[in-house]
Length: 190
Image (cartoon, rainbow, N blue to C red; front, side, top):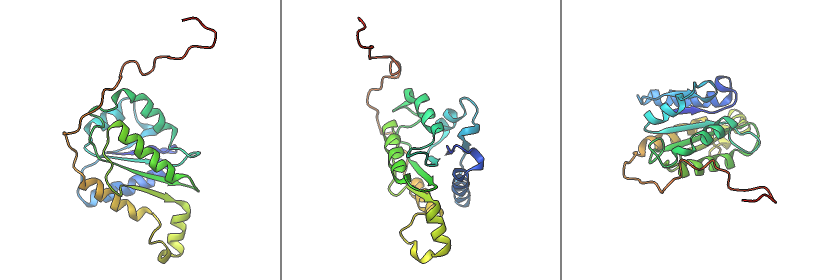
């Protein structure tokens, strides 16, 4: 499953990256589903996560973080941590950035996915920046070590090379009480 979590939905840079990934999977004859989070009906993303064997998350960089749509999704799916939606599923992360901050978004999102239960294959995260793409157009000889859309192919190769395993297990997760209030205002009696 490819999840376009960009705030602009199908009109933004995240969708261009998601479509690029989808085209790469089609060339490899890999069945996949592309879901646009902004336009997803209630329950659609969770159902797609359940069907998926591998996951590709695409997000822009917004004030040093991934999209608020993706943040909200993770909050809504907190109770599924360590469960079958995530556990052992290989995941790739593709992040766009107009300017800076995407590297930390990539690492943060990969760390969050590991905590939910995903497996992160080697070299399966890519940052695609406006500056990098402009440099690639003007001086491709200088871009050997600059990520770009072409590196999505490597990330997907490594994602596909990583088998999902049913051998993983989850630590205990409180799926019922995680929203309970545990702090009381100063001066209140318990």
